[in-house]
Image (cartoon, rainbow over all chains, first blue to last red; front, side, top):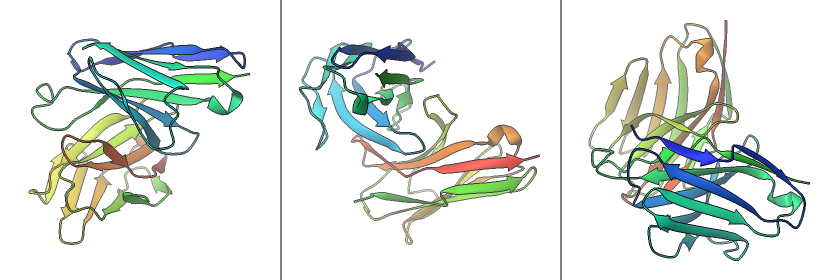
Length: 119
Length: 111
């Protein structure tokens, strides 16, 4: 149990285009999902927290108009990188939390990540 | 400001040896401390986690030692194997808020 998937796993796009990344909780309902960005050999940087049916909460310095997050259902959250540029190239990872599934602990289940390369 | 400080940045251990990674924090409100293992090109996977009311937790070859007064916790990997070679992250949070991750430790276990 507690499987989180991401699609696509790797995407290459031209500068100026928009890219949508999907994050799904496959066998549980995720009340909260998180989006992280990770540069090579660096730690995970939290971009935003999304709760089903409400607006995402963005971390300081993250452009909400550039990184659009939608959490329309308890099993799906999407991150859209709008007008992507080479500096947006990174590894994007989502995670999902369902406290009851985690036995009451504050556990997050991570997806496998999506590598975005903007040419 | 780095909420969780992790060391060392990289670690090389012989097969069969003990790998030790340390983390320190300042926020005494943190109440959950997980460790994650990440292989290249993959998302982090939970290894083991501890709450501050426990000083030690062991699962297989992995042990967390927790020192509440020193605000430090560490991961010990016993009988380290080449398959353990990965990047390890510690994290901390105030339930149910966001996780703060350490900067990561790249572990290499040489045969």
